[in-house]
Length: 220
Image (cartoon, rainbow, N blue to C red; front, side, top):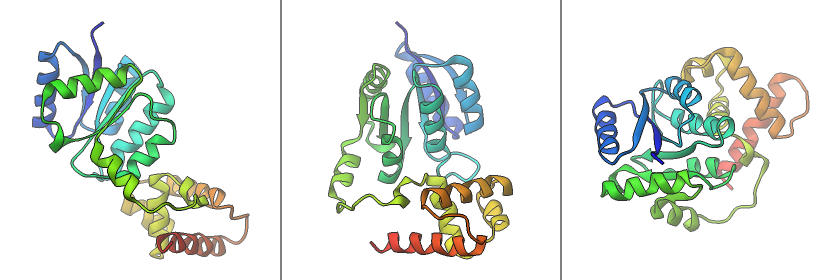
């Protein structure tokens, strides 16, 4: 059966190049996206076998690809995900592994030397396997073991919000810095309080406690 793939890459030249290579390998590229919103729309419309996603996409070029991947794995479990990155980012891999390793790929762009290996990786994750660059595994295993703490339950976006809280920024300032609505930031802040076990108290007090938790984790 022909593999159906959706490709998300904000560089038009790279996106066109990957799409052409995959098409030449008899893979059906059913959609292409330059941003997460378009990607999620295409995945919902076509439910492809695999979504190939660049980690850093607009608007902030930080974690948009990761967040889209998490959404796809939650809402479309039959669609495997292969992430492409220029950087070794083990924290992102940990976030995705929370929901299991089946149907997951994480490849470094500079280390994909042959199109045949890339195509084989796509077929493997589509069958429920994994395709994770060995460099990332080595980096994870080399990190000192740390007992899991409540802060480990925070998503990447929640960690970003908490880090900005630690800088003393208001919800409005955080929203502006992360290109989010103030209501979305309020939702993230509420989730942070809940996951850190901070019971309802005056808002400022809980923000201080959350920041102290963040700073303690940074030095543990």
